[in-house]
Image 1 (cartoon, helix red, strand yellow):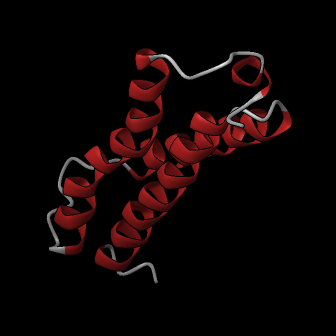
Image 2 (cartoon, one colour):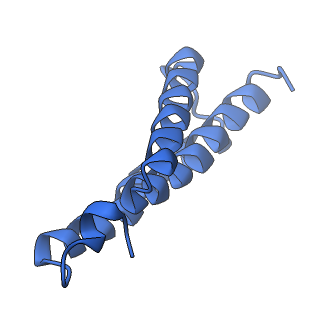
Length: 97
């Protein structure tokens, strides 16, 4: 089951299903930024901000894992990948790595 809260329900509501879908879709909104940094368009993209994003995604992933909140686990796992790719793209295009 998705988590302890949802396990107590007999079936998922429409809203539960929307949140689960959003857990997959929301992090994908960052893919345009990934594309741009790998194309070398890094003006105005803050490495510090993306380190902040990845730090919070890690925190939320740990919290979601401890409390077995599947949408939170799904979303923040994908965010870690997206955030990591942006960071790598910034480092590569800044000739740091």
